[in-house]
Image 1: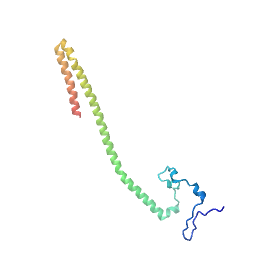
Image 2: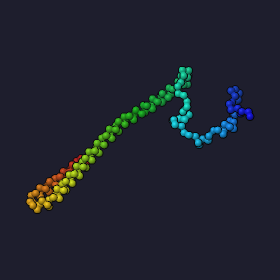
Image 3: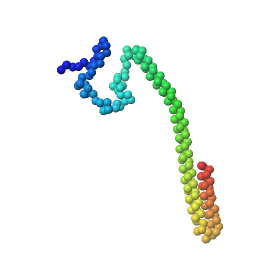
Image 4: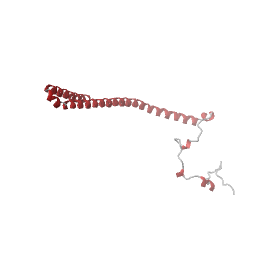
Length: 156
């Protein structure tokens, strides 16, 4: 069986040639194509090294210069993000220290109020033996509770 021509002639009018039936059956449908792992599937298997003759071509030089200019513009645009990153990093560090400080203030407040309340709870027990011990104990408990509350208010 004769092979069908798959290439157009080099000269003369443009001629559209249909692929052979065996080639049509071999091509997978577009939906079943597996995505390429690179950024652009069309350039996945293209060699990247250019010969000296290719580098002498003005088209290649213009493309390379255009790509270099695009990369420089993108680099300049990204430089502003470096400064923004450092500013944001400082703000994050300050805020994390504030959270640590507030946590310690809350712990001291809880301990102060808890101890003050416990000491005030001892007042009726100590009041029976000697009333002056009860008064002193009540004053110490109130001072602890008031001091813890004032410290919490000042730090917020």
